[in-house]
Image: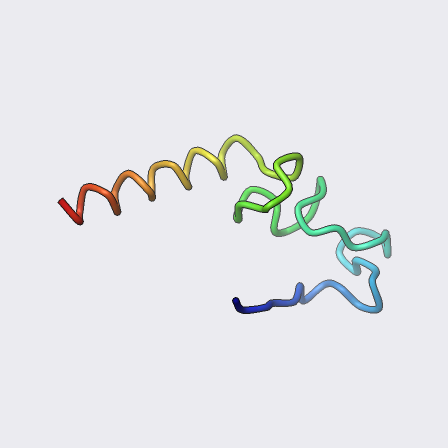
Length: 63
């Protein structure tokens, strides 16, 4: 499994959101809505919909 880091996070604080504690996917986060998180509370409807569409396309391409 790979790892990643947010370019706005520094020492556990978010430079994009006024140095609040960094929580990827929180409201206002540049990652919100762009990725699907393991914590369902951080997922937006758009991200879940796009993930489902991608899964459907992959399944159809394998058929």
